[in-house]
View 1 (cartoon, rainbow, N blue to C red):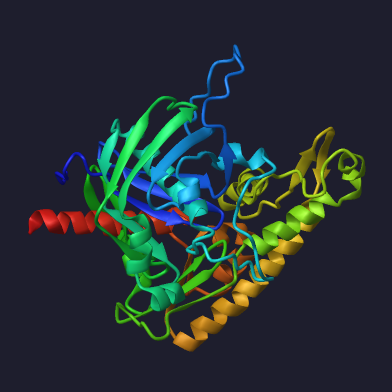
View 2 (view 1 turned 90 degrees about the vertical axis):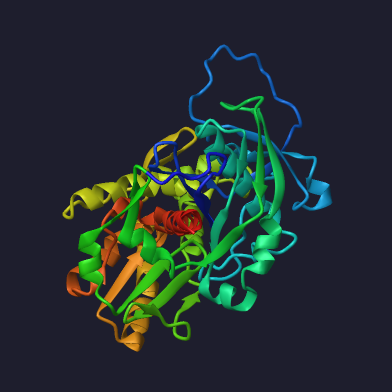
Length: 413
């Protein structure tokens, strides 16, 4: 096991338009991953104590009520408290990424206006990883990423400047109530989405040692593309003779967000929910966030599809006093629209690059799995990750691996 300085928290952070995905090394040198929905809402500066007799949940992601003190936030946000992720989704003033076109593209998350939406979950995620490792003061070598075109246009300096510094996360309520974590970030790198996904496909870490997926190395060969299907963008990276082609590697604005929003809108307007709509506000729906929609309605059926290729998904939902409403037709229609759009772009990129293999990863692979798997059956060169259920974490795991390798090189030097 590699002996990395104990105060260092080695992780990979994929700050996405639906959720922040965190992969980190625990004290045993094993990879652990979790996610936080990209949703925040302003909260009271002190605990709301309703004297409930019910025992607190053991889920430390369920009630994230925090104060984040950081000079990297705009001055008006530095002394505020926030609900983050799951608990923020029920509030009327919640903030989440806004979709601005029919492809699923979202507003610029690195603008001064939107940066708190990504920095607050990011620092909170780091603090949770630290507390799970029994640490309250950590040095975090940052390892995150940008879509390919954003990286070409921005480089990494601008983003790192938004992250470097000392940050304090105080937990006002929830499992970690009363604890404060101090995070020091003075080094780091911005990886390229899609490009660095090769690491998560080829390697893992066990007991603090890098292990390779030998079968994947044999499958890929030297010429291949890696296509990371995300919420706001799809990144397409080309490798020729094992080397990245910087010119042809690119990304598109096709993401899952638009199609998810369309499904939620259509579900809300179903006739079965006519009476429910009389009692709610115009913007209310059965799902408070996109992440809740994915985790409660989509992923249970996707996991069944992965386990049984013959399984036909059935999507049923409820809203208020109306239960067991079949929304399969709505979900499948939008899933097919998404998959058709992705397949057109993926095949175009594959033909343009003329490679042997096309590897598809990311949360979009799982969202469109029912239709994307048909392409895999049709073309032997269409490849899915070895650990398919972990497809959404490939990027954060890749950033973690890049971070770990850099730390090992530093020690060896």
